Image (tube, rainbow, N blue to C red; front, top):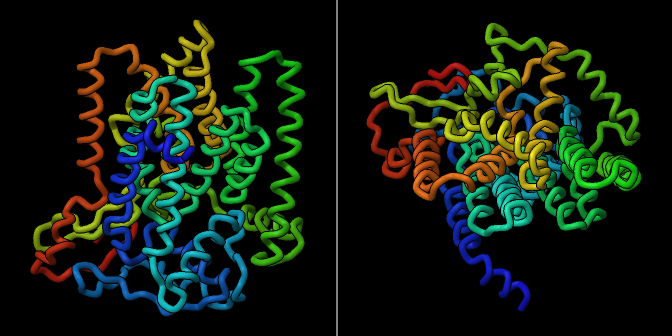
Amino acid sequence: MMIQKVLREHRAVVILLIAFVFLFLFLLGVPNFSIYDEVVYVPVAYNMMGLKPEPLKPMVLGRPIVIASNFNLTRYYPNQTLGQDFNVEQPPLAKAIMGIFVRTFSPNVVSYFWARVPSVIMSVIALVSIYGIGLILLKDKRYALLAMAFLNFDTLFWTMSRAALLDIYTLAFMMLGILLYLKNHKYASTVFFALSILCKYVGVFGLIAVVLYDFTRQSKKRALVENFFHVSLCGPLVFLSYTILIQFFGVSHNPITNILLYVTWAKKMDWTLTLVQGASPVSQPWGWLFNQTPVKYAWVFDPGTGLPLITVVGQMNPAIIFMAIPVLFYSGYEMVKSKTSANTLPLIWFLSAWMPYLVLSLLGQEQFIHHFLLGVPAVCLAIVYWLRSQSKAFVIGYVMFTFVAWLWMYPYPLLWLFITGASPYPLCPLDFFFGC
């Protein structure tokens, strides 16, 4: 009865979520080859499950294509011990979830569809979370619904939600942690912050955000006591869970040794990545807000027409990214003026997800636009907070502009080619970073 009541009260959300899930699942298996870091994570997920499946032949329009990149599905398999998470760059939780899906539904042949399905589930968790956060901060179903729609129609969130990448796992658990924290379920929120960190270390940004937010809404002494307990609980929980996970998947079963493998990897890594070295375009944190450099995830052209058959690019919806600075300044002004949670939390959330990357950039490490994913919901919430003071006609116009911008940047602009197989031309080899 309780579930039925909730569904009735939030019917519009349910309808929108069903539509969004359909869009996520539509052609989820296209392309049936690696998108960006899937070239690492999908093989790792299979390997963690003790599987060594047959590689799936890359195809477009029902025809095989040649991958003209030195990345391929089997790159990380040789000399790797089955059952291990040899990708020591990140913790194992998200890869283990991905592995459970591919083991269950496609253990013998590599399936990018099933590797991506958990990402769709995580995107739904993120969308439900921002709706719940919006209800608490904005106290209006319409605006909460608008925040959810803006997040969905941001193209960076959209692309990450349809790819077997770790960022969407981190974001989903982090947002659920923030939602539970706002609902005063602090113990439960700590669990989800821990899960976020176990997917990617940057999941700690969510915990930092709520800790800083606590200092703005109550006395510093009380906030210090409460957050000391909050943080001290999350740390051991992460370490204990990490220890358990590496008993199943770790290169070493000793957590300290396994963590030191990451330190060794990081020291060997050349962080000065450039296009000359063959890496994808770098985009520093200040560029995320002024002049984002898109990351080309996968790109296939029809050589006969020059039109893109597949376009998967990591970049934000211009209707959202170019409003980030104005609305965040507006939130800052309103925070000083009124100190309400509706403007305070989005600003602190944004700074918690953005400032660490700025520091890393100043220390010489190159960054990429997809690192900003954890800050996108904060921008969406700040935009909606600002829209509350605008006319109805302006709000409708802005929403339409956001949707049209998403439609224009949709990852597969010529879907009918996939559906009908209409292209009469042979396909050229695919280069993941530089096109054909």
